[in-house]
Length: 554
Image 1 (cartoon, rainbow, N blue to C red):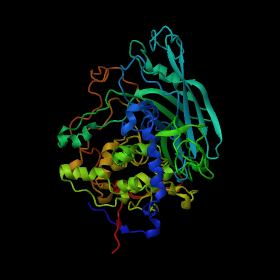
Image 2: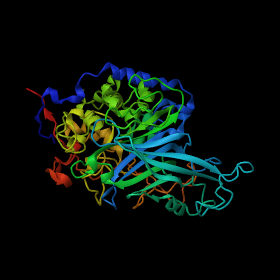
Image 3: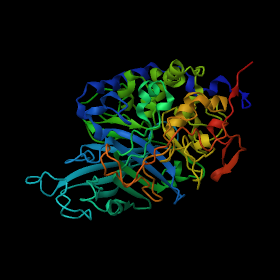
Image 4: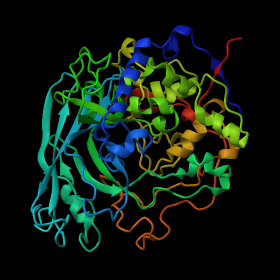
């Protein structure tokens, strides 16, 4: 079904299409200077999606999730993961967080591409006996304080606000260890509970290991499943673990002016900062070697100390992996979101992406015509009627916040969440595509099938209003290898069986069998009427993939 179209906005409203400043390209090329650094300060993010990831996995941010907490709907849960492909039996050192890095989760509440609130975790290592032992643990570990846990980590958690003020929330508190195995740690859930800590003023946090919640068939890179879609359906990440930092806080802690009713939309991304060689950046006026997120006037600056700089960055899933060209992947990880819209080579690939052309060359499915301003909305501005793009709905742009200055709004790659959308009791893995407004791209829940969703978006589903039938089965992987928890931190307990060995605790895992297509859809995207959600923010049409395309000027 072809959806009705509305009139095209006037040219001045199309902010994301203005000429890109040459300064932005210079900033990207300057950031590319990180490629010449030693592996210890490499720039990479997601599941090894940038060339330098092999050099520094502890700084490698694999995924970011943001959702209204299903069991505490007055709070938001943020989850960021690091260290891809952790084989459970990877001892004797296993997988500690880096003790020479800053791990950050950043929130932009006013839409200017700069962080208003930054949560930072810094870790310290502790050995009970490193002179006479090589073991991570010397016996059974039932508690984080047991003397048999030879290696432990503690961390300090701070929050930095837009005015630059910093507050310590937790100091020298324990992180959960890597799960050595059933003999060493027979009750890892007990250890996780001991490492789940309350925050002053409400909320809680967890740092430790978890089963990797991301699920997909990575053979996509073998010429899109070897040129035969029937060969997809294997969850490449099943059995692997990641290091997780999770945070649950009241919505007011994230919202602009502390008012989630008037200002429910926030943008989220995570970064890793490392000390290393100073790299000059044409936009870095805040001092040598500081992180790439520059606060600017009236905003915070990342004050990690002299020599700290951003080496990893992640917001929306798969952007750096399948949108950004190879030449710019490492540089993109060192760039601040405020600069994204100024970088022509990257924006050009949002407007004219590579994936649809590859699909066309292998499978003969026509690529949608460029420029792809629907993707500009999805990745750079958020979706709203006044964002200047073709998707006519109010979903998750900071432009929907009552107190946002529209003149200062800046297209920036962030994972955007409308906190006014309540969680659903029956989440659909396809998020908005499956008529579930609480899912991706409105934030990202652990169970959202972002590969299938983004594949359909790249193939033009937001423009046509219908899925691409030939790709309806997606990658054939519809769930992770373990179920998620019902309470914070929600991520599944870490795997203990070797990846090349069957997991007797979870036979079959959660890998989808067969090619059942997009369950929960009718083959057309929803066209529901506008629904009023808390604070008067309207979500028009049932979602971004049901949204009307503007009519071309006659």
